[in-house]
Amino acid sequence: MSNTGASIYVVDDDASVREAVGSLVRSAGYRAETFGSAQEFLATPRTGVPSCLVLDVELPGLSGLDLQQELAKANAQIPIIFLTGHGDIPMTVRAIKAGALEFLTKPIDGDDLLDAVRKGIASYHASKQPGGNLAQHSLGQEKLEEEICATWDFEGIVGQSSALRHVLDLVETVAPSDSTVLILGETGTGKELIARAIHERSRRKDRTLVKLNCAAIPTGLLESELFGHEKGAFTGAIAQKVGRVELANKGTLFLDEVGDIPLELQPKLLRVLQEQEFERLGGIRTIRVDTRLVVATNRDLDQMVAHREFRQDLFYRLNIFPIHVPPLRERATDIPLLVHFFVKKHAKRMGKRIESVPTETMRALCRWHWPGNVRELENVIERALILSQGAVLNVSISDLTKAASVFPSANIQTLEASEKELILGALREANGVIATAAGKLGMKRTTLNSKMRKLQISRSDLFAA
Image (tube, rainbow, N blue to C red):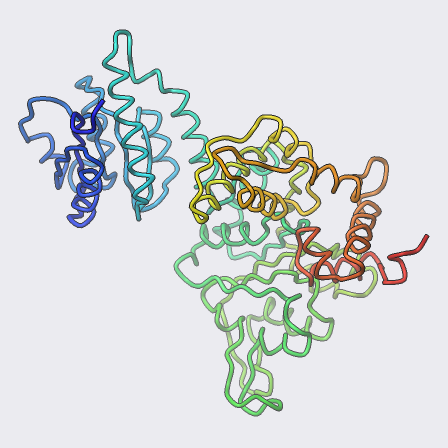
């Protein structure tokens, strides 16, 4: 089948997009015709039907979805590739169920579009064979619909397990309010993505989401980062600085690792929560703000309160609406979706084309208990992509089994004891170098330091008999 036998029609009200897509299609050897609206497309006399239709969703007058329905009523079996400026889940699923072949988000990647066009042409020719019908591709459509729901919903949060769906239901519930949210979960579970999803579904979504990792800022600088300072407040304060609380006014402030905020700063944060006011460091003017607070931690704040490491009154104010993000081992059914998501994400950046993941590899990835959670899985996939030379993902299963022997999973041990054993094993492997051990565990150095304090791990424990 030669390219010259295929006609591709492009319908988009944006002239620049229309012409760019037309030029790309022609450069691949296909014939292309362009239209500025659905009405123009329907009104233009044609001797035949196109092999594939590239169609913008949001057209003036008759929308892309309306045009799809009109073609379906006329029993015109034309493979349709939808283009959209944003990934709208209900609209996407409706289009897929109605028979759309592909759904691409602008700005369009040229290779992705040409792949979809080739798929559309193949689908068109298959439908012309005796007994052929576009319904033969329903399995592919279901897979595409599943992938869209998994990767576009909730700003890149991938998965469909009941554990994750429960979390996302809570996000939908609390997002429209202005209540403080406490996100709990192990390192690497995606707590920042949950915070972003809350912000994007709130009435503050058009304002700023300001982020601060409290564990990454030295204690002496944290007050200035949070609340700002006046010129001359301390040595080196050569100019006034606006803090994160003030920057997030009318928006959302996300504080990661909130359990690492020193006790002496906690009353000032409590005042922001209760009174929505504060003073900059070295200042006397009271500043009022309208800031929503979303915080996250991998520490046990209840235990910290009991040990007088965290203020009880602040804990009560933060714990208004807790959301626990499950570790990856509790949502193992999401691992195949995550693997495909990370393969696509990193393969594109590396200029590689991975077409399959061996069944045994996928089974091994699903069996592994992932102490570093989603972050560890992404690191494994990225490394595998670097090492893979062909179209098949090459994950070294021996690396996982070796890691399993170094970091045995808990059977009857408590989670805390198991976590302590994992950390000690990583530190021994790294000869006590915390940064190296943190990399092995798939977590940040500051997070590992925090866990060592929490679990009372000292250097003397590393090589104890």
